[in-house]
Length: 63
Image (cartoon, rainbow, N blue to C red; front, side, top):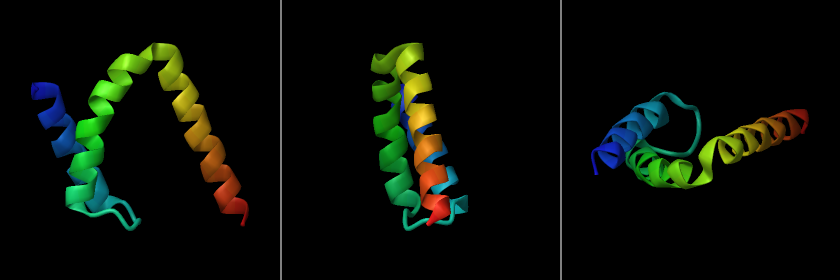
């Protein structure tokens, strides 16, 4: 429970500073949902998600 609250607070702060369509509330929801998801993925899944996000970022930057 504490992890979800910390994730929500961090997600809200990141969303406020990011230049996307996500607001503070959306960032809080993403942060709260990310904590249990990352806990289930483990280290290999976390690396895979990070590499996938990086690849998606690079592909969208070329457009």
